[in-house]
Image (cartoon, rainbow, N blue to C red; front, side, top):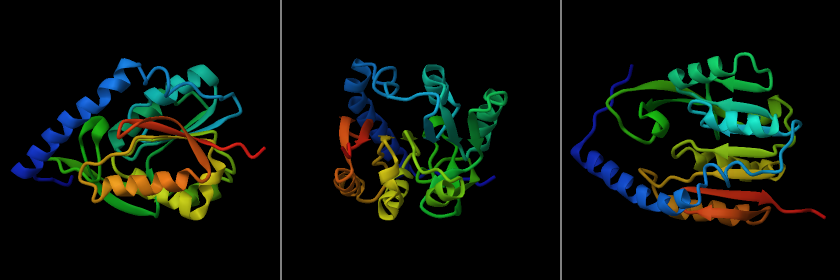
Length: 222
């Protein structure tokens, strides 16, 4: 076990961030976005869904219940992975992986902060996790089309998205449901805007609640 130490400055920063995020989420909660926008997609039993940051598997369960799609869940925190693995152990269409996806293969220490666990956030406890290249995963598993990728990985979304854009794998993804984060991420807003500018070349925004949730849909080629 790796022990983190909070500084008083970090504690204040986290409390301030929580307050800001609570205000940002008010419009989202007002429309019940978690039960509407995040689940309303043109999916079917033949669709492929990638769930980056599976936590306890609730999103995957909702998508499966609606569409019976093939779902790949990535959760590097061992306690959460165990929950997911046990939850879907009898479901051959939902595959769980005990690692996260990133731009390259690497091992990092992650905070233990429930659904806000992050490699960018200090905590008084944590664990070593494995991240693997999303490009390698797609290539090794011969995945040439993704109907939906959900990305909620507490700051790791920047590296994933930049890697997808750089490799042009972004063009095989029909929908990207993204939660951007700006805590302890240097130049987060500028980096987010750069990614959005690149996404706009291949995709179009279908909904956007800044630093809460947004979705990008692949532009029609016809």
